[in-house]
Image 1: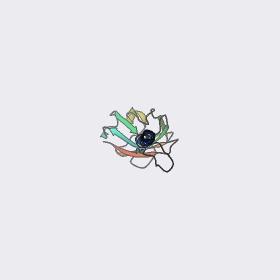
Image 2: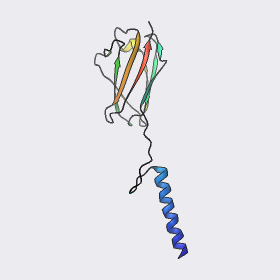
Image 3: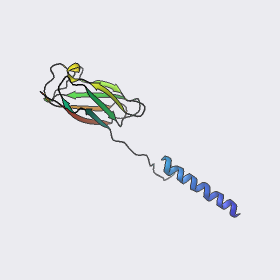
Image 4: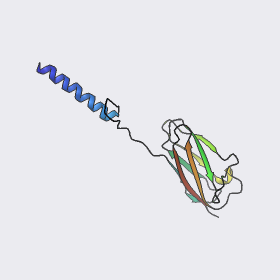
Length: 133
């Protein structure tokens, strides 16, 4: 009898450990999964319009189509189509090289803004970079 009781307690303990470690939900047990905030960055953050910058992003859905809206220092969308697109990798991250003078006509000096929005999740983040005159 003691042996069966020990087995029941062991199984119950293993189930609770699984719930805690894997973040599964059970009746009345909240999930332990963490939410990752979206982010975007430029490297370098400032430079000439002809300088290549690495744009890297994270915190989006895997394979999600992302809308990039670049806004110049005057508040005007910089692309003729207004929205540029990329697709995140399976882990929700991605990166690409970006040269402002190759992408946009009439690049002006000052602080530019990019806003990225995930088309599926609606996740959004914003960052700035500076074009030196």
